[in-house]
Length: 210
Image (cartoon, rainbow, N blue to C red; front, side, top):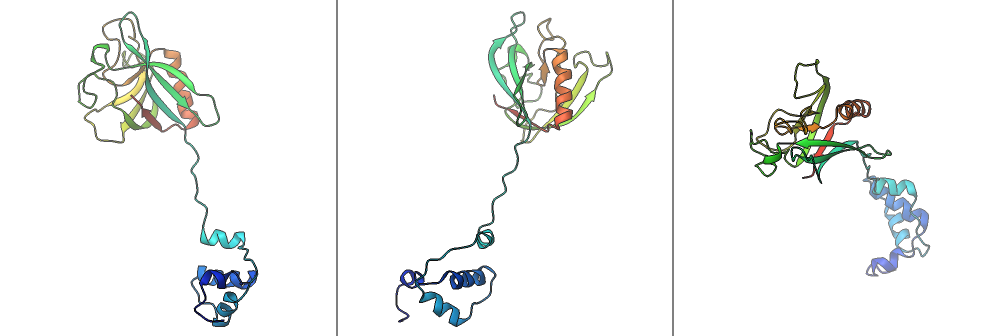
C-alpha cells in the first residue's frame, strides 16, 4: 500500500490487537517494531481500546469531598430594642440539614463603615477565614464574650485583627449590643451547641458572604 494514503483510511484497517499494541508502546514511551506499524496501517478491523489503556492515557481526576463550613450572611431582620441587624450564621455539614444561628456583627450604627479598617466597629469583611480551636472561657472573666471563644483568621489582606466567634450577652439589652466586628451569637445555648458541632465535625472554614 502506498505510504501517501491518508492516515484515517489506513488506520481504519487496523486490527484491535495490533492497534492496541502500538498505542501501548506509545503510552509507555517505547517504539513499536516497524512490521507492527505497517500491519496496523493496513488492517481494516475496528479498534477497541481497553479500560486499562484509557486509565494510562487519561487518568481520572480526583474530586475532593465537600468540607463542612460556616457561612455568615445578612438577613432582613433586626433586634427591635437596639436596631442591630440580625445575621444568619449557617453551619453546612455534607449529608446533614443546614443549621442556623442568629448572630450580630459590628455595631448597629456602623454597619456601612469600612469593614477592612481596624477599629471601625463594622461587620466582618467578606471573604474566607480559618477557624481556630474552641476555647472555653472562665465564668465572668470576659463578660462581653460569653462562655466560649473561637478565633478566626482571614485568608486575605485586611486591617482587621483579633476576630472571633463568641456569644454577645448584651445583644438587644443596652449600648454594648453588637460587637466590635466579631460574630456574636445572640443566645448562649446556640453558642454552646455550635461549639460542640464545630469540635465534633472538625469545622475549619468560615465564609462571609456580605
